[in-house]
Length: 260
Image (cartoon, rainbow, N blue to C red; front, side):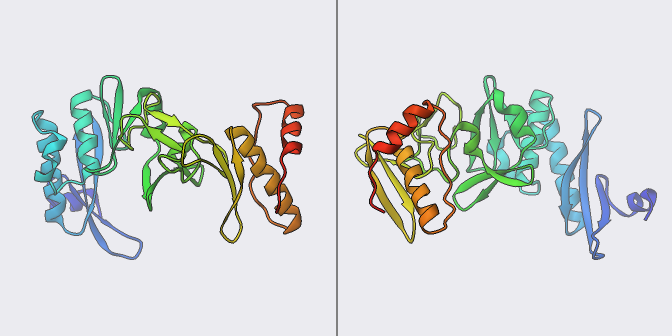
């Protein structure tokens, strides 16, 4: 189908496309500051055209904010964020980012809005956040990577055990707001917050011991992993520890007594 034939059969801002299986879809797009912005695909041209008209309304009316989004359901939420940032800040991002003065927000959904430092802008403008279970990931070099790993958190970190958000907002990842409590495999903060528990997952979690420092607990976990890897032909990951010299590491390692 030629471009002229396409335009003659669809409203402005709407283009017909077909999937590999032959299904017809209607793509909506809008142009702003010489930039052609895709608004997504829709099952019929009326919905696609409504998305186009809504996008124009957002771009042309500075009084429309994200708080008004419930009135603009024709447009996908992430596209509304992208358009409002372009309108207000003059910068286009392919991910739903809205720039603030000293930070930026990443609007995953109306209910889930992340806050990041500006130094993370380049990364999240090119990495789309996804949610799986209760955890958030980006696709990085073909793998799913927890967003917390960028800030020194382990995958599947648990708030209160591995980290703490100082202002109580679990989506505020500014470094001034994020306190990392633990970065080691097999180590958790004790319930009384007075030490660290080393544990390893066999058929269930097996407690290795209680230790005053996270470092000692991490080395205890490493020793347990060494024993089980040899004894049961397992493949437990070990902690990479470079905070102490090899001599100090060996002294701590040899001083730890385990019954596994």
